[in-house]
Length: 426
Image 1 (cartoon, helix red, strand yellow):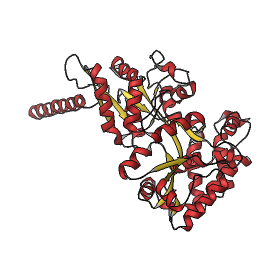
Image 2 (tube, rainbow, N blue to C red):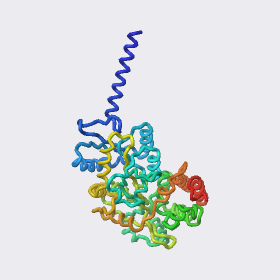
Image 3 (cartoon, rainbow, N blue to C red):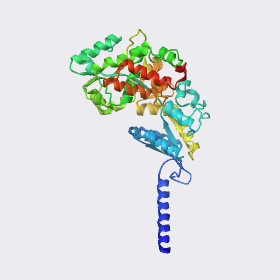
Image 4 (spheres, rainbow, N blue to C red):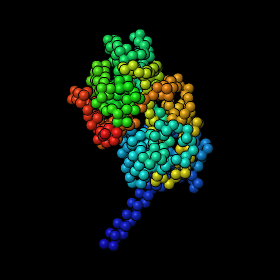
């Protein structure tokens, strides 16, 4: 019996030692692996698995001035990131530096006490109030450093347009006629599938403003002066329904990878998606000549480019290395970082005045400054359970499956928003 106890105790101690070793090797705020007695290791959590090489270049630049801070970029799969992060934070763990989803998801983490306030961080005063709002808590404190601006628009294959004698449309009628001509040529006009709901709220963010009127409608609905059953919003859902005739065959079963492949291989002429796709598409097809245009207004207004802050970086409130983390976030507010980010990622930096050597990225940046409208469902209506953003996604999926009418879609979206958004409860 004594021998058994001794064996059990020995095994238990060995188990504890194994756990300790595993803990010291893992990232996060508990038990960082330090390169030397005077150095610290910071971990960055993100959903951008495809950006590891580019982030390493940025980290190397940071290390030129901060050799005592080791930074490890440890992303998770996009579809798993939220769950992994929330589970870690609830246990008092997680990465030292957190890539925040924009608006509601990030703000919820701040409100839950998981993030460190950053109001004293130098460089934040260069950002507009609208930009900072993407990671500002309900307590009006700033919790994130804005990373980049994303835009959505209609990308098109320039060579295909030239071969078909097509030009960028200036009116909604011209846009519809353009689709008809492409279809008659035997090519799919619009690479869009409805299998993944997020693609539908995103594409509605591209097409919808041309019908509901852009910023004027956004101002009215956020103030509770109109609702989602209005003629303006209903017309945006009707337009989404009308455009399905220009989608690929069997579009109901197509997801992101499918439609991206259709576009970069030349099986579709247009691709309604975001600025983050530029570098991805070029890597897949270096010969692809990309053009873009905003969807022309159907109600006589100037066309708009849907624009929003697409991520910020925050500090884990449980991190043991907050001072070192603040140094890295401070670096992220500099012109040096903004320029490097823009060139490496081919994205629009949130830092004002940063220009790119890439003509397309610069053109999108200029459009974002001069003719932007918010991604309404993400910026203003990502609340609720399920969120109103998720509701319009599932409702549009139902519409494309023939299970919902456009009128039912608008009605259900209104019911969702009214259940939690106070201005619509008047």
